[in-house]
Image (cartoon, rainbow, N blue to C red):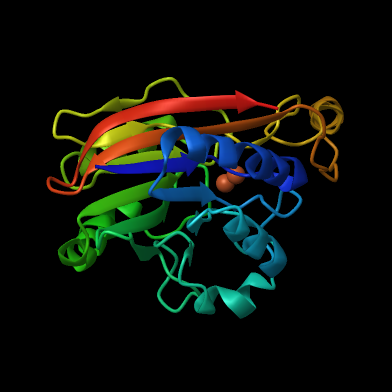
Length: 260
Ligand SMILES: [Fe+2]
Ligand SMILES: [Fe+2]
């Protein structure tokens, strides 16, 4: 069995500190084979820099996925093509820097494919994820015993539909982007682990990671407000998966929510 931790959107320095402090303890307890994290908000809430990518890898995160904030720190364009374990949504137009999937080889010669997809409902209009995912799976399934999809999307309907669409085709469909953890984790009938959203790893007493006063002010005044990430109590959100490399299916999925 393969034990995987997938961490929900890491937001700013609080999110990174939470990972630094809690991940060693979680490793000790669960002995993960693979740790994946969404890093689209790792740099002060917007995008990721080379230094921060390096920092996250130094905490024993193996694969970083992104989302709609992928280009917020424009320097990513200079290094994304050289980072085998940093992926962005696969449904950007052809020719976009970076790639939409990676294959991570575990010590026991088990290959895990990780695919990053973006939703298109209430998000920038990329190519429909439903129209490209079959080809992507087809391209990598011969090389992988397990495939995990990070579906970075806003609308719960789009995410639930993707879960059903991929049931039996991949080991897990894990939602990211909303920063609010959902309580619907389950294994679908054909063996795919599913959750609508993993939640956020960052400052708990905030609005999706941003200082709450700033967001409330924006709602009150309807004026543009420069967002800053909040401080205070940190939380780590995600799921722990047990996946069977012989069947490519999930055996268990459980949510985690830790505070520090
Ligand atoms: Fe996010
Ligand atoms: Fe996002």
